[in-house]
Length: 468
Ligand SMILES: *[C@@H]1O[C@H](CO)[C@@H](O)[C@H](O)[C@H]1NC(C)=O
Ligand SMILES: *[C@@H]1O[C@H](CO)[C@@H](O)[C@H](O)[C@H]1NC(C)=O
Ligand SMILES: *[C@@H]1O[C@H](CO)[C@@H](O)[C@H](O)[C@H]1NC(C)=O
Ligand SMILES: *[C@@H]1O[C@H](CO)[C@@H](O)[C@H](O)[C@H]1NC(C)=O
Image 1 (tube, rainbow, N blue to C red):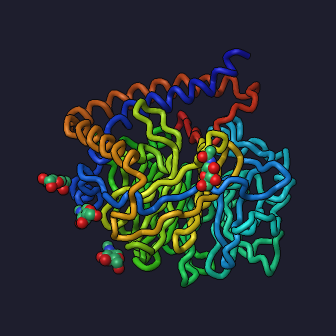
Image 2 (cartoon, rainbow, N blue to C red):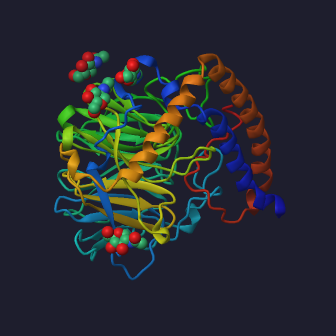
Image 3 (cartoon, rainbow, N blue to C red):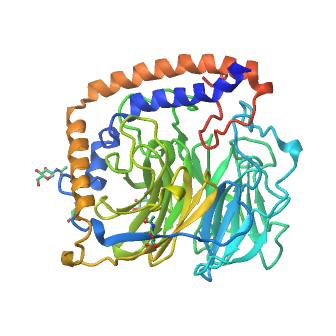
């Protein structure tokens, strides 16, 4: 029994080890120089406009008598109300999937409670609920311009489109094969997110194991697909040491469209970056990361067109020594600089594992879904973007800290050479591979007896020996 309880810790240790070794290297060093020049601004002189996007935490939102499960997604509908997708009593643990990504708890049936709840934005009142007895492990929720709801379920390996005027129990479109993981055009493997163009064409991020983006016609016929899985724990090939190339994903975890730029941007979770692609042809356009401020993991991104284009992001818990605070960060697209931040202002509601976010078109409100604590947060903007620096007098303390943070991080990156990165990568890959073999043996031996160790979102899927 003791061994059984230790397994999750061992896994975390493994993940930490790899992340420690590799992620200690700032991402900017890993990026190809050409890309870094375009996107990573000269941060030795941080933006003096940092205080332009300040948010206050709105506590006691929403109002709900019952307890939520892990909230995996949040989205804003056409009338400005807020919909969430949550897992109720289902929890993603180490036991939820086998080594081939098959869901192990299907016999328990779907979630019996409502999984989609809609709240009024201003007072947080519950307006509507549905989605009982359909889903097993909710992940993504997108509401398109026609008010269709697109939901992904990582246990079912499926993507659903619901037209609520038609039915809240029968989807109008279902993609993927029920409970069957795969990587062809009829199968997904733990799909994460959907984005829908005004034309009706849409994109699916697929997902935890395949590391690809698939584009479809409005009717749901595949048009094209791009991307390869480069996540260190699951990739099936050797990535040369050095920069992680574009169009490689270590869990494409969330999607957002910049319609005015004809771009699709992807939160490349375990590589801590946002990659943007032309919506027409899937060609890489640009990428954004900030190892100095945001860190090595990035769970979601949402674009708004105001102020020249802003990317609202949330990072996640990091395991390295210089971990960055878990929180929301706003990246200015033109410069690549972090120009704002949002976080709960009390420890009771502190961010722990934020998973998805939603932003109103004008940036006035931000909503963040949390896996654990199982809740949804609301933030309201208290300052407007403006070019008059005299209006921002209150943030000098924060500002000084940030300046230091930048300088420290920049100092570190200048000592790193390409050679040392190469050696780091090779050595760490050898260590991790050996540890994975040990781990796999333990998983096989102890699978039957494990309790409900909480490891959701530590992507453990395919530590499959046959792939290694
Ligand atoms: C950053 O700014 C300094 C001083 O203005 C300049 O010398 C340096 O080349 C810049 N670096 C980049 C990457 O733009
Ligand atoms: C993809 O589309 C963009 C925008 O239309 C264009 O600039 C780019 O050249 C295209 N790339 C390829 C490879 O066709
Ligand atoms: C860096 O940011 C400054 C100020 O926001 C901007 O003027 C400059 O063009 C940016 N540089 C790059 C390379 O994006
Ligand atoms: C958090 O912010 C809200 C809104 O600004 C404020 O009412 C509340 O007192 C703050 N709480 C703490 C603990 O600072």
